Length: 291
Image (cartoon, rainbow, N blue to C red):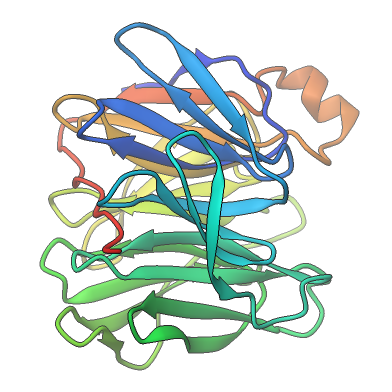
């Protein structure tokens, strides 16, 4: 199994690929390009909608359109990209913080974390949002990332990218409560090995697939946290994976080019593009936001 370039789009910071089972289409965002993108694999048609600020994550809403984590807070966005209403303010300092990776659980709650842009104070948090409002469920983070749920709903997975660590928390789907944070996967780091866990997804067998930013590859871990697969990409900075296609057996990957050295971009000209690879085990259908 190998990756191929699906869309040579050269996004600044492509992120959050999101498969709509209902539409049989892929959505994804460009954080620094401030846009929502849509791709129809059957027709090859693409569309995009600009948004007025940086957008860190996107989830489908059950009633149509999206819920998004942005710099200013959580927003409901229409199917045409129109900003409809703010659901919650970003409780942190907007000049140094924005919402980053997130997704919904199977009861339609949104889980989203923030990014501490100065990478100095560990001021980022993981949040849960539902009818009770926005609640911080974890802190002391630099870059909240890698959020995913096990198929049996017993575990919530989550990474802090600059810490080279993926954590897991015991998860109660009914209450939305989580247990203490447990280090689960700790990646090696050195002057030459800078691959660290970015966005992720879990397949139907409970395996955790993570993009290694500055690592040029995707890794797959089994439920015991053991590495069972590694798949290179022709870019250095993959950002997030998502399962899609009619049988959920296509693994999509976004990537980044913003801020990368000129030599790297010359060596990897498809940086910022969208990639895809067939897989043997399907993913899970993406839950929708309950509004």
